[in-house]
Length: 191
Image 1 (cartoon, rainbow, N blue to C red):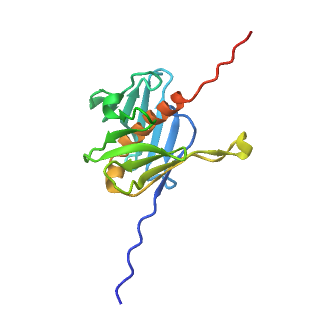
Image 2 (cartoon, rainbow, N blue to C red):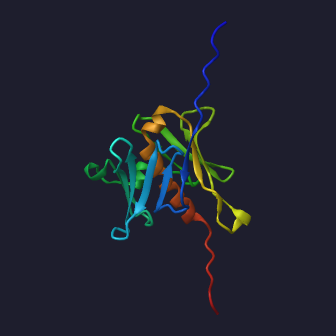
Image 3 (tube, rainbow, N blue to C red):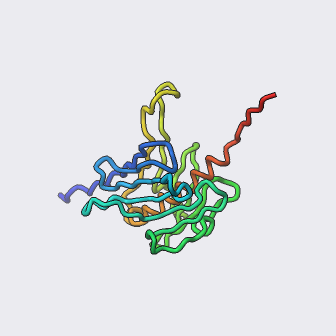
């Protein structure tokens, strides 16, 4: 009798600590992946994505976004040695939807799309359009109190995604900023 087929690896759960795009932490339960997204008050225009190196216990800057709140943000990968490129060059925006496409380090192209109001990352050339990563928003007690469940990403354990996790996070921050900015804003005026 042949041995049973190997079970597929379960998806990794990357959990956000806060609902902010500029100051939060994104990590797994066992901290095998731990990212700090931070905007310092002395550099309010630069958002850094730092990765915790488990061997040395140091935070290493893997990416930066300059002007996340502005119309023309720029991104840089690889810390101070990287080149600044425009966010529009890195993330090709979809004109009719909130999502966009970006290219991973391996050359594969990924696309952000919304499904039932939630972001999903799919491989552009996948005919099944099976999500590689799916965003689950936070939930609150009675819709107003403290968070009952933090927001998280369900990331499939695919090596090409885990290798390009820095580009995955930066692309999500840019797409989510676009989504939040595109909401209808109600202006309250005094008469």
